[in-house]
Image 1 (tube, rainbow, N blue to C red):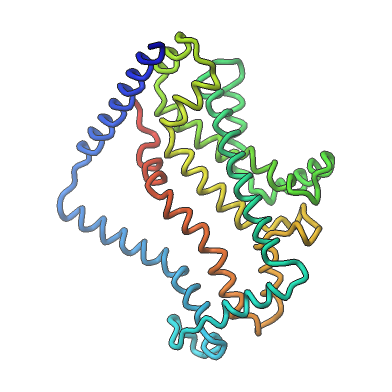
Image 2: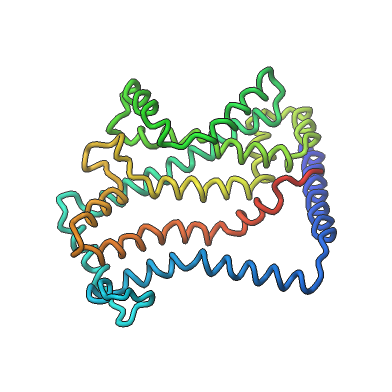
Length: 305
């Protein structure tokens, strides 16, 4: 009985959100010619963006004589899986098993992604829905930090990791992944525009804790945002090389191991192409699974009640 009124208010807020989306869609009117022009433009952009992926797949299926043919051929003529067999055979001959590299990459990607979602959600909820002195100043600092590339801060990060005795451990990669400016910015903006303050106030009056309000009320309302965050965080961690913080070969990631294999010269060109496809497949699968949430995030971000 205590949460019945709260549930009804949540349903009303969600219904109002859906109504605003419908009104927004109805307000956008275009002519038939405009629709055709937009579809043609999107088709051209889609072709341009998919070409590198198609080229990488074609390269991975080419035998060596086709890879070095002149003039270069875009599509494969005699497809073969020899490059993939050579890749896994070479990885199997390494003194560190391929399964070890795979476990390290999966462990870092999964734990770092989950930590990123949890920390970003807590911080975004506090900044967007809890009034405290200096919250706008803190968010401005986070926004300004988006301008800095990770390479710029690599030296300071290494000094910090060294002081915390995290160098050459999994924590050197996982802990920095917990707190990212992009994750906080994305979750904060989405919570601010899609979580109704009146619903949260009702929950507080009913005696719900802030922790329960976040995970029971706020997080289901911003599912597209944290699904999008999972996609981007997982992609970054999956492709990390961790060369700066990890020295032990047993703790190296799969991206580093494959990059070492493909530096053996032109004889490994086919293996290099196959390795590129292998590293590319997992982020693509994650994106396909979460693409609806990503599209919903991009389409509804910035909508106001």
